[in-house]
Image 1 (cartoon, rainbow, N blue to C red):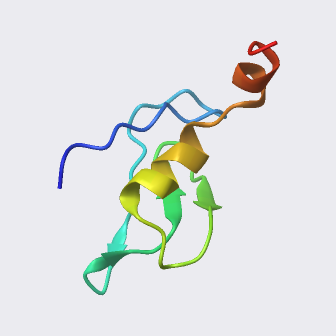
Image 2: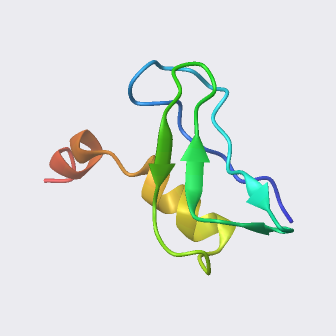
Length: 66
C-alpha cells in the first residue's frame, strides 16, 4: 500500500496520528496518542484513502474554496 498522509490532529496539532489496523484491516478510525483523540470516520469497509480523505477534510478548507 502506498503511503497515506494524514493531516495533524485538529485538537493538539500532533503529527503522530495513525489509522489502527485491527484483525488485519483498517477499521475507519484515526487516533492521536498525544491528546487521546479517537475519531470514528465511517464503517469498517472504507479504504485507507477514504478514511484519510475524511480525516484530512477541514471546514476552513471548505470555506476557502469560494
